[in-house]
Length: 168
Image (cartoon, one colour):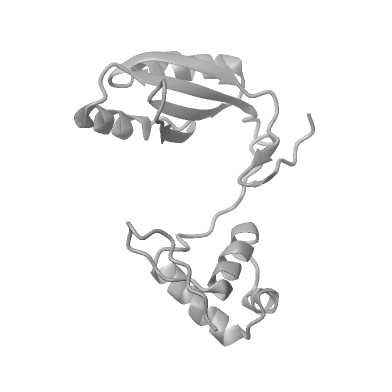
């Protein structure tokens, strides 16, 4: 019996059964896994897994594959979370901010927040000096910025849903 699980009824979605969900789960952790190994892990033969994988990619459930980069080994181990309060939260102001934030390469994540501030940013740089430059020269010059507050991370416990691989 096939158990279909809709992703989100408000968006264009594909129905996923338990095999599809297992494929997505395994690939989200091990994106370079050969089809034969993936088939073995999810309990199907190679051909059905290939067909399901093609469907998951075509429907946009699987958007792509990428390398997981160790930012610490690249010298980018300074992480700050920045609360951003805007002076204007009308749609045009949000759109202007959203467009401008995409140009700042140090901003790893940007989320519109319901609460006492408007956005939460995750900013990754090499050190505090580099962060101060990004804050002063890039973030603070974004449209409609009223106020920012910075919280510096001391240690990552989890990243991308997994335990962080770094020593304290």
